[in-house]
Image (cartoon, rainbow, N blue to C red; front, side, top):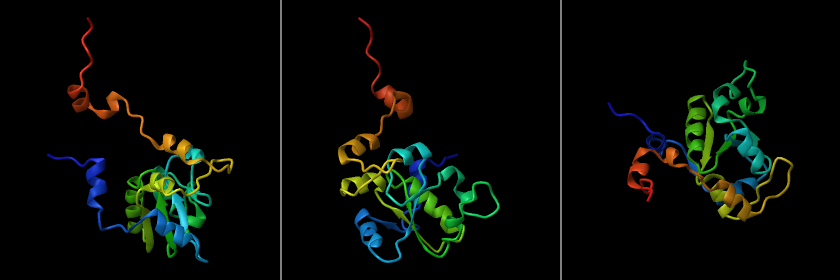
Length: 167
């Protein structure tokens, strides 16, 4: 029996969820009716760096936040079912999964930011901290760089690079 992986789940959404690039979002933000910017990262990630004006709804509570009747309900998000919603994460993968969820919930104009905040930063667009301070690109780049441990890489990586024998 085969199992889905994060990568296969994201890959299966190719073409089913619209994606935009950072330069597309820059253009959208200059029009009178800018889209809702929905950052679905964890609160600590959002606090560290986000696009000014975005709202944070972690992916773990997205379904409840996008519907009435729950403690997690975010009324502006529920009211945005017929508006353009741009879903944002660090690299554009979690946002693709979240955008697919919102589509299933009846959101009519939802897109994912391809390349995520990494691409936004690479395109030299501003990010802010929780205090509203503008962050500098190099600091943000370090923040967005993965720091995986050997255990997080999995057994295949450990077997390819076994620890050196003690001499």
